[in-house]
Structure formats: structure tokens, C-alpha cells
Image (cartoon, rainbow, N blue to C red; front, top):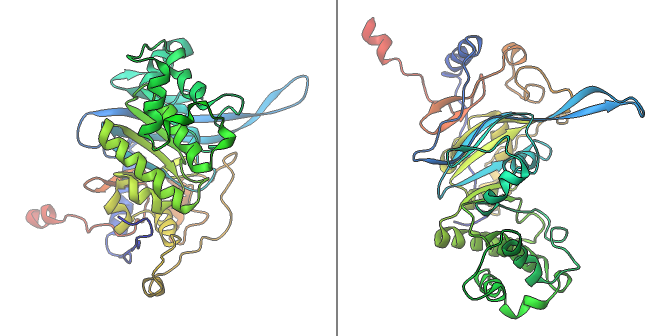
Length: 378
């Protein structure tokens, strides 16, 4: 699959929207707790109603809380073993905060994180230490995530020392094998980070992540700081490693072309909320949430002929502040389909077709409602 592959969206139909809207409103008023459809197979990671509110305080000597930044506000999803879930959205939507809570680098305000059937939400740092072998993170910036005072060998070998892992042929040989696995020369063992290019530094970060053979890797925009040619190399490396080592990824990104290339399923976030979750092909060919539709319309298409026939959706206004988010549907202040119900009733996450869920009263490309039962009764 090419990274610059065309993204097509079909026109919305007016017919089923009113029916879907009524169904959403009824389920919301009934207090239903909706969640995205779970993937087939046993989930490796389950996140339920995850929230992170950062307090805003006032005063110098006597501080008091005057508000809270709702960075993540009720996110739910699951990831099965061997799968890649892409987490996308605008800057500030809560993607990285979600990833850091999964890694236990941030303590959630509320919600539940379950890894391999064990809840890890309230675990202490000491209790999490053994799990660090199974959950690792690739950081966004390859320039600041590596200690400039240490050699590559010391950076990657620290994982074995901290976890007290004994290797068959010694730590040095294990680190050199990892360097070779990610496409670097084993002789780079004694070099320092400043002696490498950006792509090579990111490969060092990947090697450090793989040192303990984790089961789950949270990749926080792993290629955003790299040029396009190096991006392709790192993405292909991650895919090859997934096939070879049976890895599971949660890839955080804002480049939808990259996500389309690497992800099996895609979850779209807006202002701390999850607005759509679907299989990759379904989401890119028929997005249902208007926000997803607008995001996909902004993806560059290299073919001028295909680019001519595409409508670019330009959202009006700025993203609202997470300190004071809009009521009900958080996208209604920028949505061209918003009606009164969008300002008063929060749309639940509803599975509109198998494996494709969206939180919208008036979804795009919604399938027509099944009226066979009504016809039979009549």
C-alpha cells in the first residue's frame, strides 16, 4: 500500500439520518453506556471510560482549584493481540495523554485499564515494574528521548540492567543483535546519539523498546519528526518487526496517510472524546462522523486528476478549549450538520454497521435502517 494513496469519501444521504438521530437520542436519555465494538478475539488491552483532568489552580500561598482541563474525558477501546490500533486526531485532542496513561506515566483521574486480564489502573510504580517488560513506548522526538551523555550501548542495555535480565551471550552481544535487527551496524555500540541522523536515532529508540521483547508497544507519533523517505523506512521496519515478533501496537499519529498504511483499526479523537472507531478500510472509504469526514478531506493526494474531483471541507473556527468544552456533542460548534439536539444531548457511541461505530446524531454514510421487522408486523 502506498502512503500517498487516494482517500475517497462518499456523499452523505439524508434518508437514514433522522432515524439514527432518534435512536441515538433515545439511548442517551435512557442512560445507556455505549462503547465501541470490541474486536474479534481475546483483547490484550482494554480501556474503559478513561479520564484525565488536570486541575487549574489560582493563588500563590493558598492555592485553590478553579477548574480542570479535561484532556481525556471518557475514552473506551480495546486492542487484540497482534493488532495495530491507530489513534488519530488534531493536536490537543488527548492522544498522547491517553498513551501515557496506558504506560502508567500519568495516573488517570478515573476509568479502567486492563492488560492481559489484570487491571493496572491503580498499580504503584513498584507493582508496574515487572509489567514494563511487556508494555513499552516509542517516544515522539528521537532527539530528546535519548540521553546525549550515554553511548548507544548504555542506552539500550539499561533495560537489561533495570529489569535484572540475564542474556545468553552477555548484554553487549544482545544490544548488538538489536542494532542489527533494526538496520544499524553493531559497531555503533560505542557511539553517542549526536553522531546519528534523525532516522537512525528513531531506530535506536525502537531497539531500546524491543530489548525486553514486549507484547504491547505504544508508539507516540514515531515518524512525525522525520522526513518522508525516512518515515517510510521506519514504518516498514515496525511492520516487519510486528510480523517477526508478534507485536501489538497502539500508534498515535496525526498523519492519516501513515495510519492508513500501518493500522488495522482506527480510532478518531476530538477534544478528549472518541468520536469514531472502525476497521481501516471502512473508515477511509465511508467515514461516518463529520469530523472524520473533514479530516480525510484534508489528506494530500499526489494525483492531480483525482484531486480535482474531491471536495475539501474547511472547518470554521478554532478548537474549543478543554478547560470549558461545549456541552453535549463537543463538535457541534464547528459542525455543518449541527442541530438543536447536538447542543443538548450527547450522542452515544453506536455501532452503525458491523465493526464501525460513531458518536453522532446525524452520521455520514449511515446504512439505511432495517425495516423488515416493521413490514412483517404490518
